Length: 156
Image 1 (tube, rainbow, N blue to C red):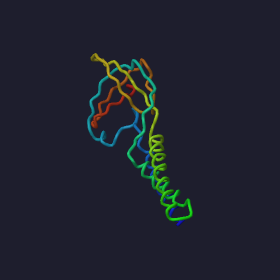
Image 2: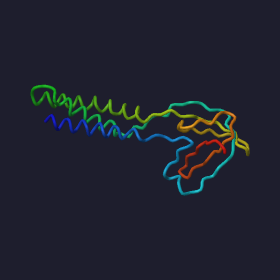
Image 3: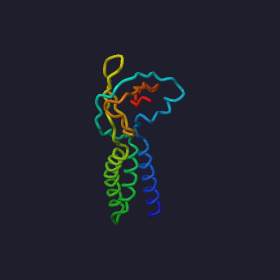
Image 4: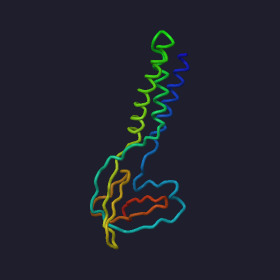
């Protein structure tokens, strides 16, 4: 029974760690859908850059993994069958809440909200992951990706 619980807890931990890979890219990161296609580009100047926190995902994977781990671990508590069941259910609920919070925390990230003044007139705002800072006043490109997203990169 203890080996089974250990296997379940290990599987739940592996599922939770898979949540950490869904990060939002910045100007140097493109989605798979944006490759092998032409994207529209506008030249602009950065007029403002503000650091933001990009919330993490809540797909349910973390909650499910936490519920399995919590239920398996807590079901070992108590001496009788009823006590095992009650403890397992309570552990699953608490584990699910913890797993959901862990998933969101593992997938949240720092970002930058750029406001740019387009050469043709007008302004746009783009929020992206903070994998490279484009300073205020710098010439930049606003790239409209094929997947509907947009990124700001420094003009070369």
